[in-house]
Length: 304
Image (tube, rainbow, N blue to C red; front, side, top):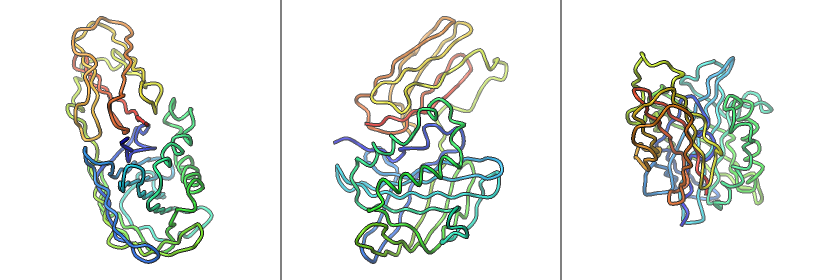
């Protein structure tokens, strides 16, 4: 059974805060059930959020996936725009004040086919892979619109209620929500989403974040892998200005070491390694280069 990751669009190319953890809620009405998306190495599900700070607005994109079986998942997507350059805690209500230019979009897609993910990947333009600065609030708004068009018949769109993000920092996001949602397709239906909880932690990779200030920043360069997203191979390039003891390792989103591509002395110059991830599940992975006292990291998205 092919695993489908919950981090399917955003985290691989963001240079700003990324979070993982759990989202849960109950729903009743036209359909009844409970939703639980919690990060685990042994399951398909989980929740993620990415924050994009900007000027004059900032945005949060949140996604969560609950695995039903090998071909079926339930998906939650939330997009929130903040009118401040730095995204901060607050309460966002539905319906939005401006229907044509909403500051919040809430979509719940119960029991949809996993082919949904391949359609999502097709929405990412090649330019985003090469330049993550193109990923801004406008791009996210357009992306949400395209997602809703792909599976509009299966979507329950939030119409009434609110999302309260009581706490948001670089370390964590915590919040709650209660939403009334209308089925966009036929036959129509209404569900009440209640007891919604959001509990996410900021991603911190092991050994990342301690750098020797005496090292000249441009001595060592880890370039963006290509292609990204990829399946199953991606090329990793980096350059060293002088000989260093060097390691090149791959971590999954929980911080577990998944592969070690290089561990030893390398000469100065350009280096290239092809990483083959045939035996790993779809998901976001972190490429970590340690050379001398310098540490650099890049994100990649494996889609199978």
